[in-house]
Length: 266
Image (tube, rainbow, N blue to C red):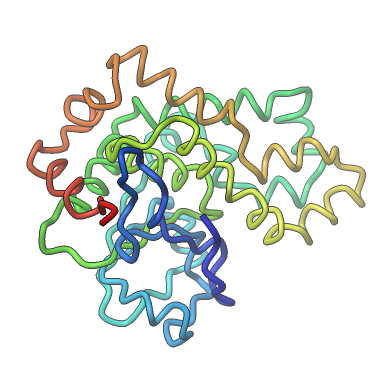
């Protein structure tokens, strides 16, 4: 899934054209993912051409306050704070404080060294499945996509890789994409995210920080997504039951979502 060449927003991608098997693919031009929109120029041709009508923001209250979105003209913002419960119970998780950690190698090593960064992300991904705030957020997102009168929708978090990556996985799973396609789409953001955070990574390593820790923090790894998928299997037995019973997405919204976002080869 190649990135859309927008200069003012990182990791802007259309889920369209991804293969779903059986001569089907994701319909282009309806669902997009990205990093935060604090530097977005709505007038930039690559952005304006998308016709975005809804922006789903998965970030925390603090993230939104520090870096407010610049929403495209005519688009409706929808806040869906995935991590609210984790903030209340255990403080800001690594997915939402990358910049702080990359600016302080000693703190990063103290909190996440010795392989703990991967374990921390795996816990966060499992919470995407079971925490109340995450379930409410992803329910709102999928229900919005299942609006028969909805227009093009863009969803994002801060870097556009974790909360956003799980959202993209949910969409593709509901549309019938196989595991290989879903994982490839999930990992495809790594180049863009690492490029966007390159100055911070370079500063981190120049101060003596562990480059492997930095890459594990900034990028995504298969085991992160696998942790969430294992949580779905353990709690619900299937993605279908998770969406319907765990998230409470109405059947009619799932049906519309599939109809809207699937295209068949002629």
